[in-house]
Amino acid sequence: MATKYIVRIANTDLVGEKPIVMALRKIKGVDHMFANAICYLAGVDRAKKAGDLDDTEEKRLTEVIKSPKSAGVPIWMLNRRNDTETGEDVHITGSDIAYSKDNDIKRMKKLKTYKGLRHAVGLPVRGQRTKSNFRKNRKKGSGKKQARQARPARS
Image 1: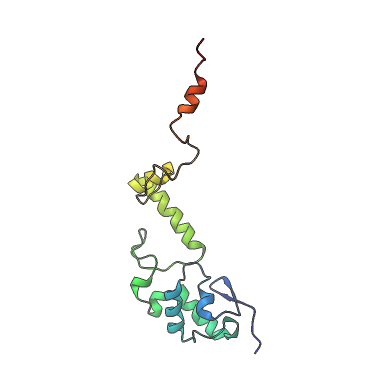
Image 2: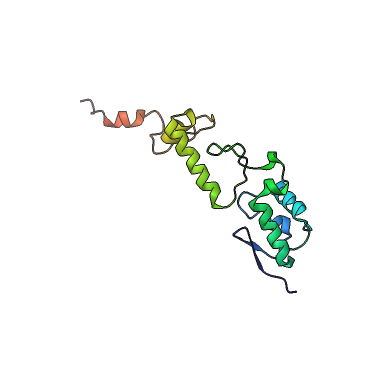
């Protein structure tokens, strides 16, 4: 069997020359620990190249990524525990991450939470300083120089 250069797992193209653990990390929402757990639960050798996988191994990996909770991944490893809409523990991957993040920010703005208000105004959300950083399209400095130039000269 020839080595494939591109492998498609969970709607993502992966490089076939890398080990499967490293290649799985290219899927958005899959980190190093989750990739190890996926390989262990799917019964795939972690050192095996992604291009050397056969079709059954690719299907098993995709199934574990799509429904990790039913495959046996511990709940603490999932990236969306106690979802606000459904209340379930799920793991989201791909473009669903950006979609859910946008919905979370919209919900916070609608509820007018502290974080939602900071998002709406464009200020930092997690308690960083704002005196020296995060200045966007605002005057910098005290403005003394502009005030001096605007004054008429004494005669």
